[in-house]
Length: 242
Image (cartoon, rainbow, N blue to C red):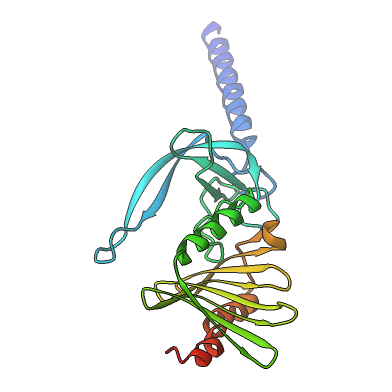
């Protein structure tokens, strides 16, 4: 009789323990719940594309970085699901990467190379300084046709800058070139500046660097990339440049 009672107690105890374990498992958060914040570690390993020389293929490498600060909007999509990453432990963000709700890196084809847009003015100033360095020492030529002034600036027998603007008002376009390709176009009447990478729209600045954009609708991308392809053609015709 005693043995039967012991067996009953043992079975009841096992049943209670199993019930507790099942309750704990079912109460764990669902990682697919979109209302939860991304689960991102303090230190992350990120696959980066490291370009080699033009004669070799690009290779992938792993870089470990430390997350700086709270979640922010890396790609201007209206969501604070990105993090600034410091790769060299100097406290300065080297990258800005967007994650999904499960902590996986989002590969956004419209966002360009994870450009860190947390300080638009500094990014704009850096880009404009690079353009000035690009044209340093070029030889400028100008021509006036009616109320429009055209200019080119030549370096090493190649145009590195061209402009077309209303002589009296100054409204028009400034185009910069790098290795024969359009690098940037600026609309002088409103300060909009567009940067291109091998013909592909990379980043847009507004209000002289106060605002920056790296994501674009298909319509906007098509329009601005067409501007990059055609903006200089009339200027080149004026100077007989092919």
